[in-house]
Amino acid sequence: MSASPTSDYPVQPVPFTAVRITGGFWQKRQETNRAVTTPFALKQCEDTNRMKNFDLAAETLRRRAAGEKTFQNKPATLYPFDDSDVFKVIEGASYVLSMRPDPALDQALDGWIARIAAAQEPDGYIYTFRTMHPDTPAHEWIDPQRWLKDPDLSHELYNLGHMYEAGVAHYLATGKRTLLDVCLKSAELVWHDFGDRKLRIAPGHQVIEIGLAKLYHVTGDKRWLELAQIFIEARGPGGKVYSQQHKLAVDQDEAVGHAVRANYMYAGMADIAALTGDARYVSAIKKIWESAAERKMYLTGGVGALQHGEAYGADYELPQDGYNETCAAIAFMMWNHRMFLLTGEARYMDVFERVCFNGFISGVSLSGDRFLYPNPLICDGVKKFNHGFEGRAPWFGCACCPPNVMRTLAAITGYFYAVRGDALHVNFYAQSEGEASVAGTKVKLAQTTDYPWSGQVKLTVTPEKAATFTLKLRIPGWAQGRPVASGLYGYDDATPTAWTVRVNGAAVPAQADGGYVSLARAWQAGDTVELDLPMPVRAVHGDTRIAAEEGRVAFERGPVVYCVEDPEKQTVPADLVVKAGAKVEAKAAPDLFEGVTILTIENGAGAATKTITEIPYYTWANRGPSAMAVWLKRG
Image 1 (cartoon, helix red, strand yellow):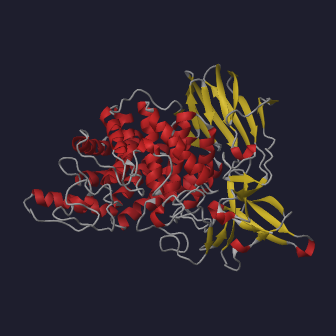
Image 2 (cartoon, one colour):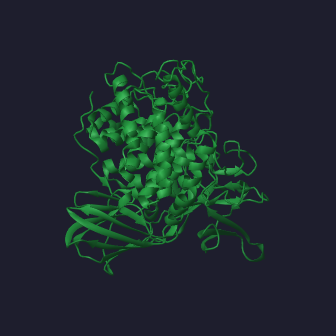
Image 3 (spheres, one colour):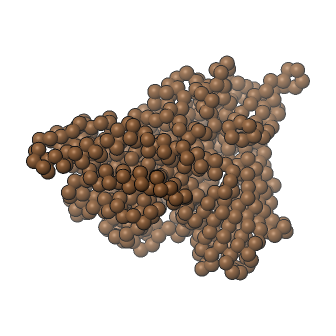
């Protein structure tokens, strides 16, 4: 079935370039990402020889063209997918350039792109491990012929997917076509080799589907959308579950296999569903989402419970030391956002928020230069769980996660707002200023808030002229008495909070419909909306079918999940007991972790009181390798 681009997402996101964070939680994270993580990642790509691979490939091309027919170079790194780290860094750095001009960074990217272009073969092929060492495979994952081992582990198409994303990002950020032209030359080759469907290969690590959809968006060339669909439809039956090749994509109904591969594929399926109008894809990914979010997701929003294969486990198989790769969390965010854009349903953004404040942002240190690859919910502070490190690491041999965090943080504002017809959705609360076009009218929005530490949000709405439209404010599930839409987790006290909405100071009788409160009115410049979301501390229990959480309790406040950490390793956090009737309070800690709210749990009374202190999960392991636990014993 050929791709036929007849539509797009019914809900359109407001691009990240139209929204600027002005303070608070995400400004700190985004500024650290700009000032520390971005230059750090560029340096790591040089120091670990990822960029050298492009130079070696270019040298082989030059010297062979000059007559040295047997010349070749050995790769300077371990993995054939190391090229992708460079592309993700370029993508993230391009987003940073969109936020703030930086001539030095701009020049550095120009230099990198020139080196990448020099490593591209005349017909458009670009894959440094083969180009630098063309006579025999330089790695066991590589076949003597192009593409043939991609369904396994060559990562040829995976690398291209990230390059296409980077090429589009750099073009949109700078207006320069240098990397985009490299991408289009590559895509022409991919079309030549795959476009007639004679070569039927299911990518072993999905992401090219997303990259091709972005190429289609920026060029309007329908071939790139058709290629994305060709790669999705090359799957199953009888292939590997690990890489979701076991069934036709449209027949899949469960989140299985390697979690990053899976979530990238499901996001790509959403793109195809939106751009072609093919309802089969929508039906499939809704079923798969229910499997992932309602039976296989951690309280932190992490997914991919199993270390072996970095994979989804069985239903309710959620061990406390679950793997929860940072890249899987990012891909899960991408997928959930696309599900919202397809449906307009708040439950997807509820999951997005849960992942964002917990299982995603935990992947990078507050300093911006130390990272977690897995994000377990328990740790003894001794085991080298983090790819050979007992705590946070500056980089990894398999370094997919750090640049993934970098690019996601740089573009986080692209998830704040969305428009559908005459409705403007407010999905994410953060101190910020933004602009959207609603029903033909430009509207400026300014948020004043200390979210996630406070649930008080003030929005100033300024249309360029008086206009009638609907402002839809997301009322998070946690404010409605449920941590998730299913029974996977629940609150001991599920009473909804007494949230309120005021417009220009006057209370509005508001009711959440589908997770949103809708304010339809004629808006004037300077109108204000005040949303108050009380944030009681919630004790959380897991579904009885989650064996690892039996007899245990966790705590969260607003969108933030908490844990106990003991950097001194004097206690075993997972053995701590929360007695029935224990007093739990939230307290501001302005001098801890750049300013957070902590929880204190008081067991007993008077002199016999024993206090347990909990910190936000995302902050753990910032004081060195630490014993930690999210789920505590019930007394």
